[in-house]
Image: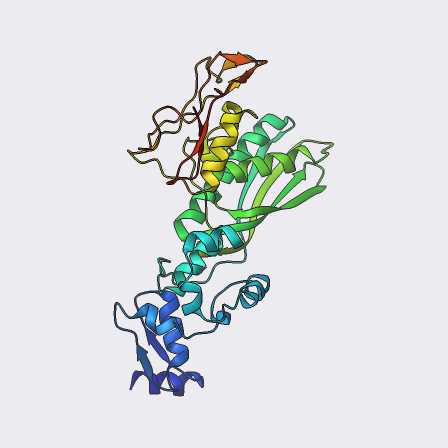
Length: 328
């Protein structure tokens, strides 16, 4: 009755899909007959979406093309692949898509679609001539926008900054946000870069910051850092603590091989910089022990050589668990 009334009132082909997540419910509605509904019981999501073509996913054309070359043409075939292998092949944004192919959709339900843009604006009764307060306002507006994006489950793909001088002249600049993000620190850094690139002749009376276009968070993913504020090094270690030493290479190999820090493994890495160990003058290490090792995977026998951590010589052994190489 409700479907019939809605169809008559709107003149549209009304269908209803019910499922545990937005993606499954959407596909159920597409599978329903006009004027009827389709219910996907809990626990049957993966089986329901397995026969759907890759075009059902919100994936870009290049990803679908490469999957076709690999012989993957349905969501069931994609779901059968290891999630980690899919992420390594296509990037972090492919992880949530692999989840959708398995019928897993953690996205919250919102009453509205992502807006075209979100903006914050400041007007100044006393014009600002110094860049320092402008940078402070940019940082505050970026934090406010990031909080709104995170709360509503969106990410920004672009950033635009606009200034208005006391004379009425306007200055504007923009740049893409790659990868799309809702991180306050990243938006603040980009805003500061845009502000630094503008040439302003007079005092500023108005200042706005806009993020656009917005997309749902499931189309991207964020790499969590091991240390707050330092996500740029291998395994989330601050890059300032890592130099091009054999220890760094071991960490990089271990991170790309999907190593695990378990109680039965041993991996010791020491980094030096300028002849001193670590940014605080102490060795920086990560250690766990494999049953196949009797000594650390790397050592700093003989101290440092030319500002780099020495690696002990001896016979090499490859760990069968994580694939790392130890020297004894």
